Length: 309
Image 1: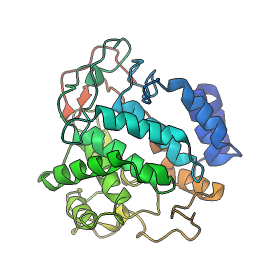
Image 2: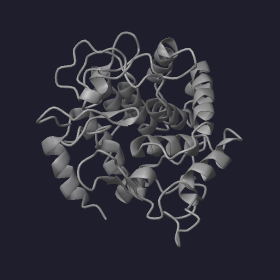
Image 3: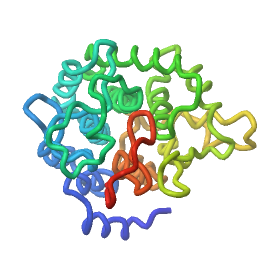
């Protein structure tokens, strides 16, 4: 179990105001209003998010990585909703590529302090990595926000992701794999294709249930808890055919749910966080490890000396 008191001290000492407000939502009597007020400091007039909301991307410009983290906040304030969700979907719709995808990052002119994998990304190249991450988060917001659920962008990005996932024949780069599985989990009960694809890709997981991060720091890997941080999800149902035990408990419907279908009580949030979700939620999207830099497809050129998240 996590030592909540010690974690709280760490957050007060080290965390940004936004992440302190998110922590309060999970563990104390934090409010959606306070979390949204902190999030607003990263917002741009175009509806997107920048200004270092993604810790390794310091640009002021609106970026897909910023959209991902903004959607995470909108998910966490459930059952409350905010007009920020629809405005963000409007921005995502306006910047998506012709096939409905997002690039890993758009052109960055103010890249000082940012990790190379963001700055060097090709803004014209579709990235299933970031697109599935953003789309999965949006679907989790849509579980309680009907305006987001009805937004046309969500349908188009879902179509892109499903087509790209269906065409995936080999295990993806570890961090991309994580977000692809979480996207499929998020749409499990919404699209008939999702369960079979989740089972097919789930069978690609190593017997250990952990994914080595190729090119990362020595021994770096994603654990089953990184891949499936919330106990009440579908993706934990699928275990490797040679594995003697499942990654976690089999999926079951939440016993206490909102009208939209997702359990959101403070107690439930605390249980999820104490299971390890706090680690997954409050870490940066991807730290620039000393041994390599990342892109939407995996390790690229060696990082500059001293680069860090």
